[in-house]
Amino acid sequence: MSLLPRTLAYEQSKRKSRDVLSFLRTSVYSTESLLGQVMRIKHRSTVHNTLVRLEQAGLIRRAPIRSAMAFVTLWGITSEGQQLATPSGEEASPLTFNISKVSVSRLEHYLSLQQIRITAEAFGWTEFVYCDREARANPDRAESKYNVRPDLTALDPHGRRVAIECELSLKSPARYKENIIPGHIRHINAEEYDYVLWITKTPEDQQTLHQSLTARIQELREFERLHLSRTFTDYKMFQFANLETWLKPQLVVLSNGGQH
Image (cartoon, rainbow, N blue to C red):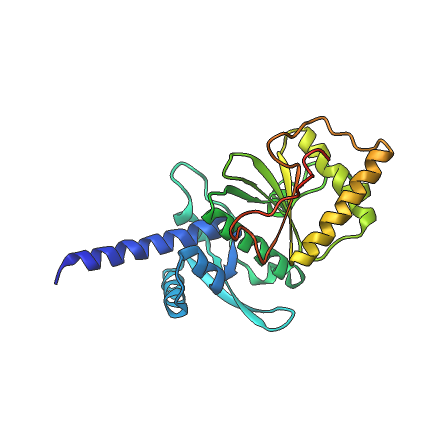
């Protein structure tokens, strides 16, 4: 028998393991379905068997959790997994999977962030940062009502730093006007990121949010409370998408939002 098929199988196994550990290095835990997407595998049995092998090697562990509708099994990285996933010359992350620290109320949102990341990376997005985790790692950073924190930041395929807001439920118009819009503009003015991408659950929510933010921005402009020091000529300051069509086939953006 030729050694080529066996060699290819071994290399594919290494690639799948590497992809899972690289993803969990920062995501810490995920579901079988999402990790199957990370590995680019469609067959559930193959996904499961790969995760079991990593579990048996002590690199990941699993635990069930009761979500809003049903039990979900989460797979998360161990300290041994973090050591193996760490690039040479870097310090291993202390983050490991502990089911007791998983927020049930925030689980759907966090898994949605992972779906956004997985899909975007397939289209050339890079350097994803989970901002809540970064904030907990740096608790001394000053906070104010305008110091809004996006859900994610990433580099888009054009090399622009993007703040991503996953809006599974829309906030009140007053909150967008008084805190969220001014806070994001403050960060954009400081060149901490180049634009904000709002991703809603459905196309209908996307349209509602688009209309709401447009109205709030107009109100801020009328009262001379929109202090924007940057200009936007080749892209939009606020962009919109939804989870149902995210990057299928391309980002849906606000047609007149570049000069908010």
